[in-house]
Structure formats: C-alpha cells, structure tokens
Image (cartoon, rainbow, N blue to C red; front, side, top):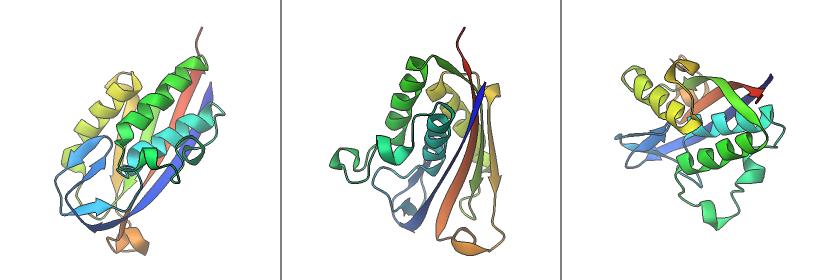
Length: 158
C-alpha cells in the first residue's frame, strides 16, 4: 500500500460559476486558473501522482501549455487514473478537505463524492469529502480563494 497527499488553491473572481469535485456550481464567482481550476480534483490528482511516484500536476499538465487552457479537470483526472492503473495500482480510498467560506458546501458534498467515485472507478463509500471554513483567516477566510487537501491510498494490484 502507498499513500499520497495533494493540495491546491485558486483565487476567486466575479464570474459565471465554478467546479468543485467535478460538480459545476452555479455561483457568481469563478477561479483564476489555466484549466477550470477545480481545486478538489487538482488536489486528488496530486495525491494520486504522489502515491504512485509519478511527479506532480504541473509536470503532467503544465500551465505553459495552451492545450490545457480552460480544460475540464475531470478529463485531467481520467488521464491520471489511467496512469495509476498502468502502474498496476488500484485506488483504495480518497479523503478530501475543502476550505471555503463560500459557497456553503454541505448540500454539494454527496454529488462531489459520487462524481469523484465515478471518475476514480471506486465505490462512493471509499470517497470522503469534508468542508471547512477558515474562520475569516487568510485569503480563504476573506473569500478571495478556495483550497483543497486530498489524501489517497493505493495498493498494488494482485
């Protein structure tokens, strides 16, 4: 068994919605990012890459490559899941913490969990999504950004 951790943060600006955990949220903000900026998916990608010794998201999907401009992060995750399988690992579980003052994520957590499970090819009970605020501290607390941490465990396929 191997474990990996991932982290991502993106600034918020006025916009026409954002994606978190692969779920599109109709909100008056958007992420400043090269792809769609889904911090949850990006953190999961980094955690998977770390667990499998495959580098990091910036190596796989450089922000200098125009091919990734505006890309749906779910597509990036699918590529990484395929690479994990190619390395002969299976994903055992994923645990995510989303740090956001807005939007309130409680109503969206079941959809995020189901979407991530589907993208990862695992059962929803192997995915956990937690939402936290930063109690008014730092950029997240001032509602200027959203951040996410992810931890994963993978196991060698038998």
